[in-house]
Amino acid sequence: MAKRQNPFPRSGHDHDRCVSTALAAAEEVCERSGERLTPLRRRVLELVWGSHKPIGAYAMLDQLKGDGKSAAPPTVYRALEFLLGCGLIHRIESLNAYVGCSHPGENHVTQFLICKACGTTAELDDRRLGDAIGRSAAEHGFNIVSRVIELSGTCSRCRASQPREGQSDKGVAV
Amino acid sequence: MAKRQNPFPRSGHDHDRCVSTALAAAEEVCERSGERLTPLRRRVLELVWGSHKPIGAYAMLDQLKGDGKSAAPPTVYRALEFLLGCGLIHRIESLNAYVGCSHPGENHVTQFLICKACGTTAELDDRRLGDAIGRSAAEHGFNIVSRVIELSGTCSRCRASQPREGQSDKGVAV
DNA sequence: CTCATGGACGTTATACTATAACGTTTGAGG
DNA sequence: CCTCAAACGTTATAGTATAACGTCCATGAG
Image (cartoon, rainbow over all chains, first blue to last red; front, side, top):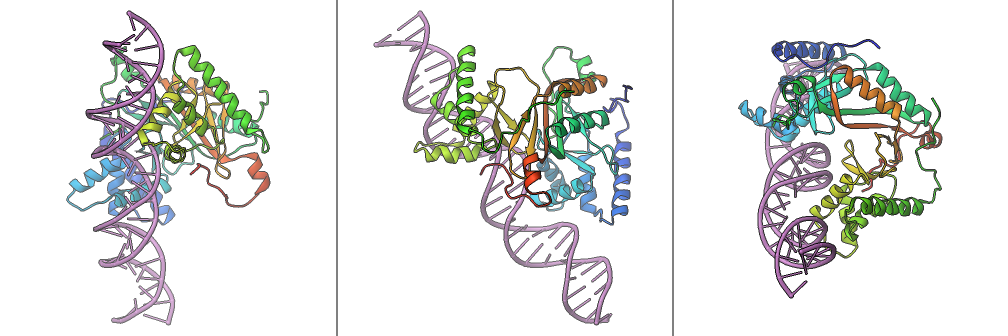
């Protein structure tokens, strides 16, 4: 049982690099599948990657409006649908919010660790866990098509900085 | 790795028995904790237990209205909040719907198997799985407080009856 | 080159899910 | 009986998501 690299971003990490990496990966994924990464879709992907905290559709909508362009809910929801379909972002069901995919293009079974204190959400792709879940379901004759695995709690950084306090920032970007 | 009993209800099972068992358990849980299982709360619990398919709050609201009483959203949401707090029902995040708890009063880590064909949702309480998830999180220094584990797919009965077809009934009671 | 086509997007309206805020009723204990 | 808090009624509104239809435009067939 090897210890993996911590999936949470370091505190002072170069986030611009996260964004540019994600955009480059998106270009490639779309290239390969013949899909069109239009300016709007690209912009929404940037917004999702604005941080490692899941962001709600209407928060993105507000930012799109700030761009000077007109925007209505379907604008953002259509882009989100596209990005979800391409596997470039994930939806966090327990937050009604969206977060960038850390491993676009790779076929993976994903679990999310959602810090209730800082809002940061990390993507785990623990194959053992995915396998264990698949086995458990199979024992009951159940054929899994999709999985929602969202674990809320406290990340190590927040636990270190606020050992016994309430949370300061609930997380989902507003 | 012992094979457990199938958590899905049999097709011709005596559902009235499910309901009365659930109500009796609720009485006991509330008795023990000093909470009041009022007629309204009891009625909402009955509605949740109307089937093994998760049901939405507004569907319950419609049924409450059918009872002849007046009812507004807070009526049902308050009852749901109470029942969730008592551990008598669960919320299915991926469906925005509610389902009865199969093991009220027991401290358990729960996974849901949601059949996309018939809508039936089974509650798994696989401790191995819960432990595996806890270990995986702990390896990354993450302290889990709550879990959402919802697996969608096809139950054995639906797979047997419709080997290669689309689904007939999407699930959440309307 | 023209035009038919389909995908992307704009726009309006609406559905669905959930909670805030405040007033009234009720029931258990003093 | 009276008081107090919990439960509930009621109105309004917030938050999340989609339906439906029209326009624009790039592309490829003719």
